[in-house]
Image (cartoon, rainbow, N blue to C red; front, side):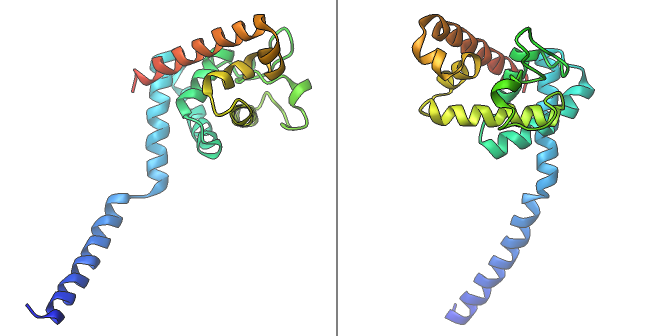
Length: 181
């Protein structure tokens, strides 16, 4: 085979590969929808969250997981730990919504209605991301910070122990969710 034929076949191969390769990639929106559906099914089965609620919240969880580079299963597990997927949850200290954000600490960083599911999940993910950096990229410590605050976790043994128990519980919920995929 001469060089000209080689390049013709090579070019034809590239063209065919690009068509086959592009066809196999598919629409990114479809891939996102499949991920959201898989997450919703997992949340429904693992935590007994109604299907419609799991389907509504899964895309929000995924979007924020992608933006803040957090495993979606971790955000979903945190929501289970914090509110058991009750959007209207308010704690005795005033923590609000799915991720139980305390407005007096986060109102400047997370403006808007913290009872809104989109705003609340976005705020919770942003807080996790921020704590992840300040916790030295350690998810266990990050979750402890989320629960009791960085100062309490670092300076008060009782709070550190509480934060560690919290982190273990969230990781247990995360594992429970992963088992339902």
